[in-house]
Image (cartoon, rainbow, N blue to C red; front, side, top):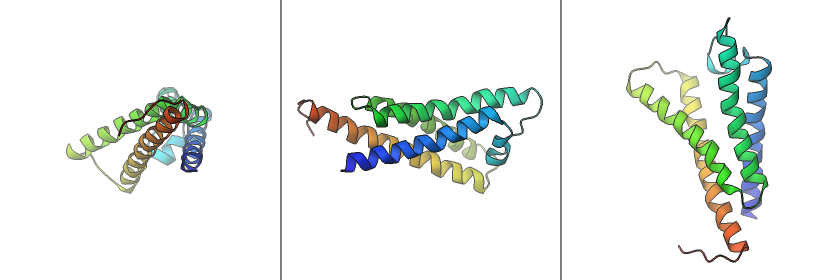
Length: 138
């Protein structure tokens, strides 16, 4: 039962960030209101490509890991992306970067995302291993 709940949570997470990524591809200015990034002129192309790629790859990894039995390692992709983003933000905070409520909210979302993906990876990989008859040592 817990595996289905985890799969559902991962898939909802993937859907949310897939929508964020698609919005960024179609309208890079949507990142302005969400992340405070100004997407004027040539920068719009970079924001469209780079920011959207981050969200779409993370959502794809989560969807594959959540949907396909035996592919739980794909959950490590969004965990690595969001973990790296969180570490970058923490370095920025300790270096004196400006921090507002949006940055704090992003850090919380990143930390929760990493936690969800690592927990789902651990639980779903154990379930796959036990279903295939592999003995799991604790």
